[in-house]
Image 1 (tube, one colour):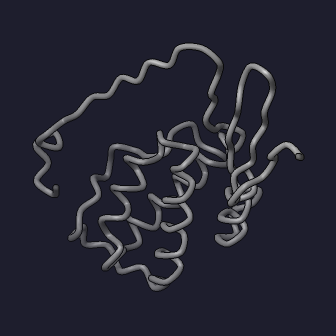
Image 2 (tube, helix red, strand yellow):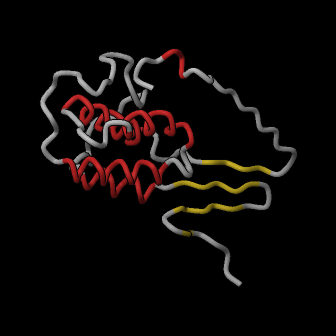
Length: 144
């Protein structure tokens, strides 16, 4: 039986000591779909200003289907990039009526992926300790 190298868009690299899962191909597809191949990368996926809200006053984004499609691709990327989950969740809250500000935030996340395309999930042999934290009131956010 052959070794698994690629499954459902997830690249699998395996040695006797570790397994590494990444989605470089999916990242390239989302960048191509948004004409962002060759764009400059950024070190963070999101900025803390301006705050994203449903009524930010900016014009609506004209390509809602593109927004939906890109958000779906970003949601699938969270399979191997759990760090993106918070940001993707936040941007998914505006799927009904995305504005230009929301699209700009999506493009920022895509620029982050340009610089971190080789990141993914790394599993090694040995003991695994999972630690989780929760903020039950969403940091007192008025939007959530």
